[in-house]
Length: 383
Image 1 (cartoon, helix red, strand yellow):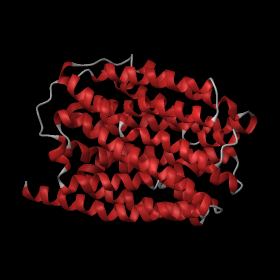
Image 2 (spheres, one colour; image 1 turned 60 degrees about the vertical axis):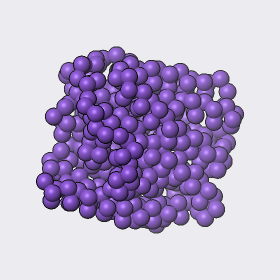
Image 3 (cartoon, helix red, strand yellow; image 1 turned 45 degrees about the vertical axis):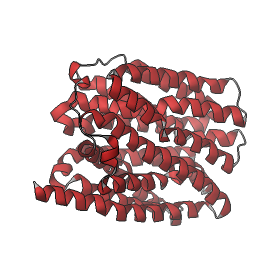
C-alpha cells in the first residue's frame, strides 16, 4: 500500500487536533465559561481516553476487523461532535464532548496498530508516516491563528467537524490485509502488567501526560494574558510541532543507536525543564521560543520511544490492548487529571504554578523511567 494512504489519516486527524486543542478553550472562554468550567470540560474530553481505547482495542484484537472498527469510530465521532450545534449550555456541552471523545480517542490507537502491522519489519519507517500528523497540526494551528486576527472564533466548531468528517473519508483510502488478523498468542495483558518495568512505564506516561494539562488546556489563554497576539500564539504552537517533525525524521536512527528506554528518560528530563521555563519566563519571547522547541522531546521523542517500548512489552495479539492502555493511562488518566488539576491550580495559586507543578510531575516520572531503562539494560545483557 502506498505510504501516502496511511499518512493521509494522520494528516487530517491531527489537523483536527490542531484546530481543537489550542483553540477550544479560547472558544469556551468566548461563551463565558469560567476557567474552572473550561478545565472540567476539557477534563471530560481527556477522561474518555481512560476506558474507551481499551474497550475498542479489546474488540479489535478479538474480532480482527480493526479497519472496520476504525471507520465506525471516526464516523460516529464526527456525528457526535455535531450535537454541539444544537445548543451550547454547560451540561449539553459536557454530554456532547463526552460522547464525541468516547469514539474519537479510540480511533488513533487502533490506527497506530493498523499502520505498524502494514509496515511489519519496516516499522522504523513509522516516524516518517507519523510526521504528516505534525504537518496537519501545523497547518491548522497557524491557519486558525491568522484567521482569528480578522475573523470570529465562532467558526471553530465548523472547522473541527469538517476535519472529523475528513478523517473518516481517509479510512476509505486504505484496505485491510490478511496478516493483520493472524498473530500468535503472546501471553496475557495481566501477566505483562505485573512486570515492574511495565508498571513503571505506564506510571511515567501518566505523570508525563498529566504535566501537559496546563499546556494543552490553557497555553493559548496564558499567552493572551501576557500580551501575545493570536497570530503569535499560533506560531508558537506551530514552532513546537515543527521541532517535533525534526525528531520524527531522525528518531529511526537514534533508537537503534541509543536505545528506546534511554531516549524515553531524556524526553522526560527535557520536558521538566520546559515547563519550568514556561512558568517562570513567559514574558521573554526568546526563552519561550527555546521552550517550544523542546516540544521535540515532550511529544516527538517521548512518543516515538514509547511506541518502540510498547512493541517489546505487547507483541502479537496484545498490540491493540497495549496501544489502548498507553492511550488510556497516559493520554486518558494523565491528561484528564492534569487538565482538571491545572484548572484548580490556575484559579487558586495562579497560572505559573500550574506549570511548576507540571515540572515536578516530570521529575517523578524521570525517576520511574530509570526502572524501565534498568530493565532494558538487563534484557540486552542477557541476550
